[in-house]
Amino acid sequence: MRRLAGLLVVGSIAFGATGCTVPTNGITGLSVDRAGHLVIVLAWCGRQPDGVTIYHERYPEDPTPATYDPDGTEPADPSIVDASYLAPRVAGETASFRLDAPGDGWRADRELPSLDPTVTYWAYGWTNDNSYSTSHAEFQPGDADKLRREPGTVLVKEYDDRKGKLVDALIPRAEFDRRGQTEECPS
Image 1 (cartoon, rainbow, N blue to C red):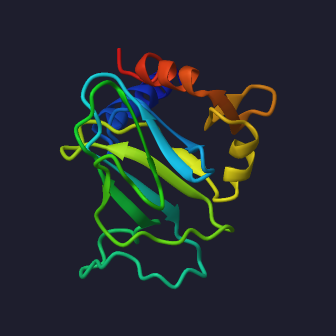
Image 2 (image 1 turned 180 degrees about the horizontal axis):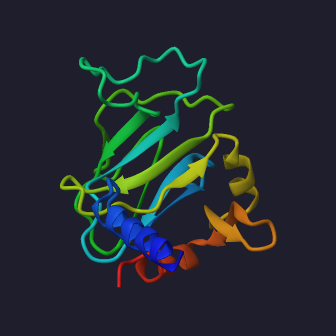
């Protein structure tokens, strides 16, 4: 039995080392600007992200076609990219931009979508060479209302020990920046 358990641990470590995910190097959150518009917020350490993607999960009733796979060997793409933004070079290790009207050098690489208030979206920062990504932020367009009531905060997910799951948390922007530049960085 110990041998089987040991093999399972070694196998899971080997699988994790060769898996399809990239390391996390920073954090993604959601905030609002002074006018109350939704803003993506990023904080990282070291090299900055090259862009940000916003996506949502495919639902059975979703009419959007799955990624084309002519020989049928790959599973259907479980997510739909709603928006992708290209980052300018920035000084420092934080950045933010409006979802509906990116500025300060941020630009959308496709037409900006109108977000459905009933859909849950995710956003994350990425690098062109897939060397890392920032942690994903989960949000719905209606989260802007919570953020307008708490100016200067950023919506993130935190693990709640009592509930045993991730829950929404509003944290001050300074705390968000600190976490992105320390806790969410590889050692």
